[in-house]
Image 1 (spheres, rainbow, N blue to C red):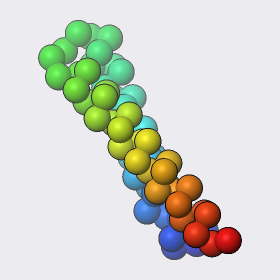
Image 2 (cartoon, one colour):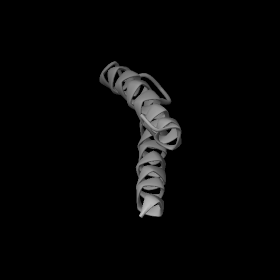
Image 3 (tube, rainbow, N blue to C red):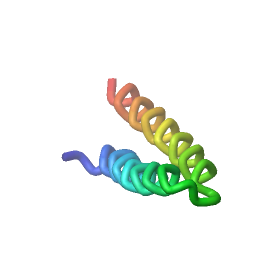
Image 4 (cartoon, rainbow, N blue to C red):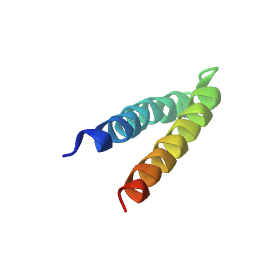
Length: 59
């Protein structure tokens, strides 16, 4: 794995783990779960865009 792919992928996987925790909190109706879920969706979108920029910059 190239080092320039590492950071967006680690960010995506970490946000995925936090989003799973947010889903569990949302099932239990805890306060703040929708904020955590929404913020992790934005972090995942950012990491995907970052990875696409890195991949397209190689060409």
